[in-house]
Every structure is written in structure tokens, then in C-alpha cells.
Amino acid sequence: MAVGLQLRRLVHGYCDKPLIRRDFKFHDNLADAASSAPRNIAEGWGRKYHREFARFAIIARASEREVLDCLQDAYERAYITAAELDAADHAARKALKVVNALIAYLEFTPDWSRD
Image (cartoon, one colour):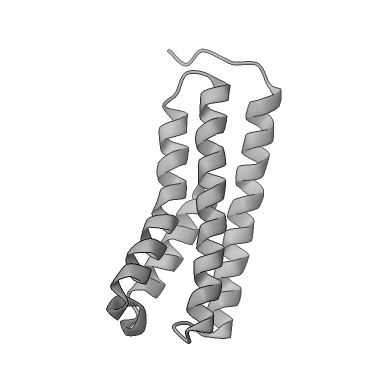
């Protein structure tokens, strides 16, 4: 899930901006949302069945949508520029596209054994 990792890196870079760093609650929420998607994909990968993995992928998708909302909020608070919002929006939408494809695959293919 390289695109999720790219989004996380981009957002963590934004979290180093002084205005965001000073807004502790916002900073923590944004950083956690950006980290949540890759964490959930990793945890889902560790599950044995597609249905379980899909559940974690769905949670990852929700986290990526939360990142989008936080970034819009960051722009409205003047924490990030329009160009930064566009870059992050592009990265988030790529991540959403990939996770949606993963969910579709997991929901419509039989389980396999990775033991």
C-alpha cells in the first residue's frame, strides 16, 4: 500500500509546520488519521481470511477520508496553502482508489491460505 505510505509521509511533513504543531489536538488528530490507514492495512494483511482483511481495509478507507477532511480544515485555518492542499488531496485520492480496489478484490475472491 505504497500510496498510503506516501500520504502518511506528506501529512507528517505538514504536521511539522509551526501552525499545525502548535495546535496540539488538531496535530494529533491529523497525524493519527494519516498513520491509521497504513496500520490497518498491515493489520489486515496479518489476518487469515479475506473478509477479515476487508474489514481492516474499510477502516483504512475511512481514515483516508478523515485525512481529506482534516486537510480541508487545515487549509481553511490557513495552516497549509492551496498548493499543499491540492498535493495532499491528490495523494489521498490515489490512496482511496487503491484501497477501494483492494476491498473489491477481497470481497469478490475466495480466501486463500497463507499459513
